[in-house]
Length: 383
Image (cartoon, rainbow, N blue to C red):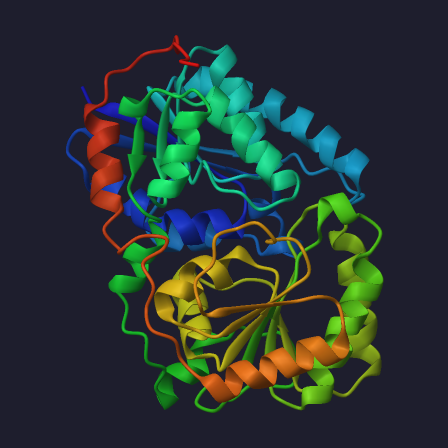
């Protein structure tokens, strides 16, 4: 009988980071993939990906809707509670052997709570990292609820062990999204350039020429600051007069105020910015790899960006404590600082590939552990 691995996808980023894992589980002779999709991953406003999963050949076992409107801390907390209710029912029906959860979002915490109370083994990917925001608290909370841990490097593995987790259950595999990168042709040809970007709003971008990639998400612990920070960043990017592809924010508290500023800006201003809600994981990586610089506060610029060697400017404190390679310049919300950093990175050009987050050989290690690890429910913590 195949071991049932239930993977929960609740955002577009989850799919980008886990597509290679999903494919490997699906192909493994001893494993059965159960795919659960919900939260922002099923909402058009945040890059609904259900159709993309089906197009890529995956069967979705269960879908749930849980996002309470408001995009504020109250809605975020209530949504977490609602997801616990939804996933409890789904896990009870699917009866997986292992629930596989990724990273640090509040939806992941809900999944860990639901699985733990149902006595289902939890495997957690990307634990042990630090970032300095509420995501870090969630990530460490999920670590304490999880039974087996897949980390991006030895430093994060050691941090989890220091938290009292069994060293035998901590595996420094690297980030699985890097496996996807290794399998791609990262060059954008003239014919391919016409197919990558979907319909969007703003000035069309010629991907065979120089462009920026911008991704700016709300910081939950700085709720209320999003409007002025987004406005400042929009004006700064626009003043540079370099074509830019700007990705829509995620569903965290504060995303609504960021979205409103973007909508007002694109209606009033004539700019070289093209706004996008979602892309396939492969096309997103192609865009990042061929950008002359990435700007904003996305962890992908630090994680995948370091492996690709793409120059990036991280603005603000959303990633303030995360380990970074030499491809990153950090700046505050100051127009002059941001502009100077972007121009410096453009002049500097590509960086050497860095293996801080793995070497692109994570997936086989993760799947082999999922297939062979002893199933247990009671953890024994060492202090």
